[in-house]
Length: 260
Image (cartoon, rainbow, N blue to C red; front, side):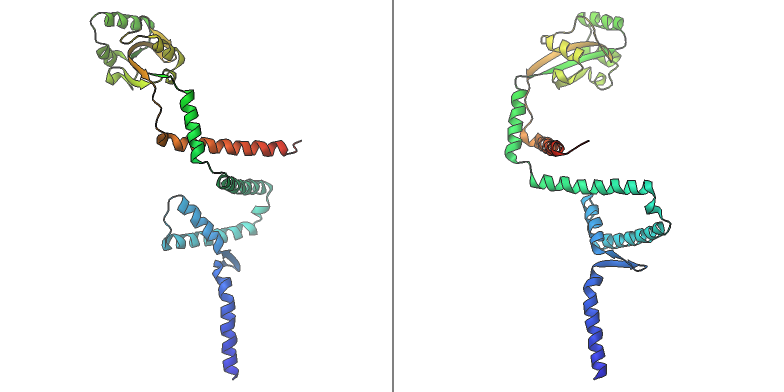
C-alpha cells in the first residue's frame, strides 16, 4: 500500500512539472530559457526567408543556450551595469517597442484600394498633358569640338556615326547617341529645356552646356506621356500613403506632447 501511494505521488509530481518544463527550451545553470524567446527568434528568421524546420528550431535552441551562457558571464563581470551599456540597451529596447507600435498602427490603419485608386487618378491628372521626347545626343568635352561636329552634321555626316566615334556618354554612344523615350524633366534643366524647343528632326544649332560637358541634341519625335498602369505602381503608391499616415500620426502626437 505504501509503495502504491509513493508511485501515485511521483506520477502526480511529474504531471504537474510537465507544463512548466514545456514553457522552457532549456535551463542553463538554473536559469530557464523560455520557449517564447525561441518562438520570437524563429518568427524573425522565417520573416527573413528561412524555412521553419526541426533543424532551424534546434539551431535556435543552441544559439539561445550559447547566448545565455555568455550573458551569465557578462552578468558576472558586471557589464550590464556599465553606463554606456545601459544607454545602448535603452536604445535597443526603444527600437523594438517603436517597431511594434508602428506595426500595430499599420494593421489598424491599412491603405485601401480606394485610396490607392484616388491617389493614382490625382497623379495622372497632375501629370496630364506632358510630353515624352525621343532624343539622340552627342556629348564632348569642349565647345569647339561640339561646334565642329554640328558643322559635319549639317553636311553629310551621320549623327549616329559621329556619336559612336566621339560621344563621351557611355550609356548612349554605342547606340549612336540614342536616349530613347523620356520626359524632358528627366534630364538636367539646360538639356531638357533645349530639347523641348526643338522641332521633329531638328538638331541644336549651338552646343548645349551642362555639368557633364557640351551636348549636341537631335529631336527624333515627341508624343503625349502615357501614365503607367495602376497595377505597375500601386505598391509604391500604397507605401507613400502609408508613410503619410504614419507621419500624420507622429505629428498629432507631437502636438499633444509637452516639450521643454
